Image (cartoon, rainbow, N blue to C red; front, side, top):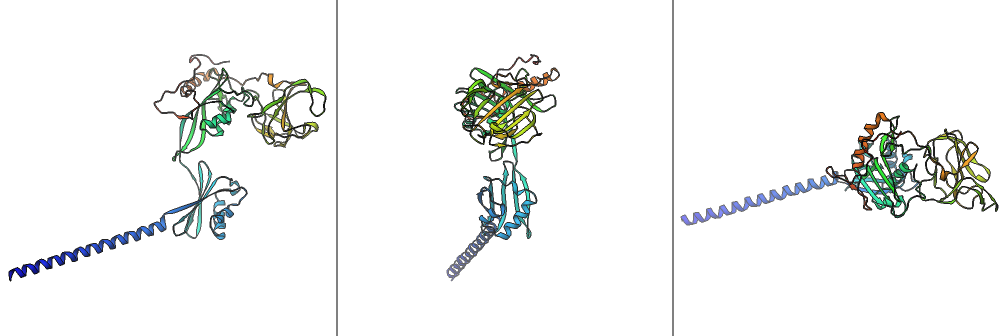
Length: 432
């Protein structure tokens, strides 16, 4: 009898344990189902999936939104909200526009990349939309870049892994001594220490200051260090304190143009078929190539003028007058003040011209001068009062110059010791 009781007790215990296990399993399944349901709701409500579109030319903002699946009513309301913080007339073709939706299709955000450092963000707020411009966080890093010329400076800077803007900046720094249309030759080298604004994802947003630069043309090195002029404006100087800036730039164009006709007192005119003086320099360049003024001055004529075609005439304060002829378009007007390097027109073939080119001339008093042989007077050097400050900045910048290489730019590690550019004597006096 006792055995039967024990057997029944054991069986009851097993049944109870089985029931409890079943209840526990059902509870776990229920909890897992609840968690899965919560996760599904979270995914439906919180996870945002973005659809991207590159802004096409001449497309209004609301039309692009509708192309991304937004209703006409919402597109109009989004556009009105965006216009309150950003001028949509400045919408740029090629920039990215993104629309974010939940997995259930609810609109959660619209983003437009204004530039490398700013994003226009539009998001729902109650029954309306809220717009703001967000700044993308960035850090400034010092970078060393070096390269060798195989084609043009423009191409070689890109080959070094950099953007075309850096080539333009270098051309501006050395533009008083070098004509980057005619002077570069294979085997030339460049080195530069430049600030870069870097985003958290490793993308470069923009270049900052160029602290030091070098361009070796053949066997002749040209070097520049950032300092400031007597007015406190950032300016570049040679290592011995001479100003890089001169009264005139070396060329009215920036890159890769061939001189097809030099200054001459007796040149055969290709249209008039007669020998006559050619008192300027012809630069062959495609129509639309920007033309820059070689120096500060005042526009005293801008418009069509006979065989010169569209002409710009600029009077400079030091007694010189410059002429820019055969332009396809004039971008300044008579009486306007212009600054050195400012874009004033576009290359063309108006007037007596057999092809697109710029006829550039320079005059002093009544005499036209050969610009190719004209010495360009420099600006003031570093003053004796500021010489010690200049030397300190110069030596720090030069010590960071990279070794000459055709490889892409290299970050400057805090403890690295890059190859230094040969400095001027530290105790030397300014060049006055």
